[in-house]
Amino acid sequence: MKKRLSAGSFRYLNEQLYTIPGNEAFDLFVDDPQSFELYHHGYQSQVSKWPLNPVDLMIEYLRKKPADLNVADFGCGEAKIAQSVKNPVQSFDLVALNDHVTACDIADVPLLDESVDVGVFCLSLMGTNCSEYLAEANRVLVNGGKLLVAEVKSRFEKIGSFVRKMRKIGFNLLDTKKSKYLFVLQKDDNKMFVWLEFEKVSESPSKEALPNIDLLPCIYKKR
Picture 1 (tube, rainbow, N blue to C red):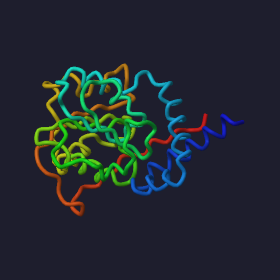
Picture 2 (cartoon, rainbow, N blue to C red):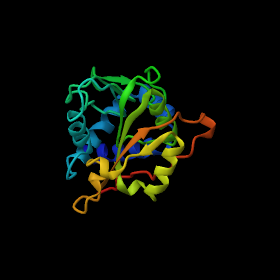
Picture 3 (cartoon, one colour):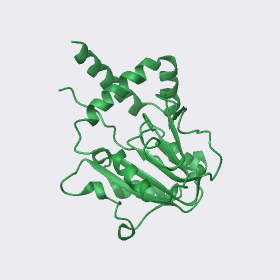
């Protein structure tokens, strides 16, 4: 019974995170930190059933890059990346599960402009204001900086539409011929995830001019 209640609470919290803006989600967990722990426990239970975890490919990617590149992990969870690579990593999420994490709304992170070389969104484009998260990543990335996005494939109605909107926020999709990591999660033997690697090529527009990033919610069904 306790397990079923926990699973139900996780599904409820998961749906909330996809249907409210980030600042409301932040306030939700500030008021009730234990809810985030419950959510994180449920999320880890889901991860254990996956054929692979995209965060492990993020770690593999970074381990092949110079160790002096500054990294920002948006929606980091338990900050596994920061604990697995030599790079300096700033990790942000709604609640600090450990000392590696800074609790904040990821639409407003405490970093200087153009202070980051690599930005990461690993299954963290949740909420109704994803465009603001991506614009914030643009703000902190240096020109030419890389932005890594891994998401559940079913969240994209049309990946091409997402890529075009990313271009309006100042990011170009890297050529698949130049990166073996691009679309690595779309192979026929694993159709669950999408991996996209972008490069910052221009500043993002004002908040009012941002395109609407309307990814579909990832709702876990009752089993």
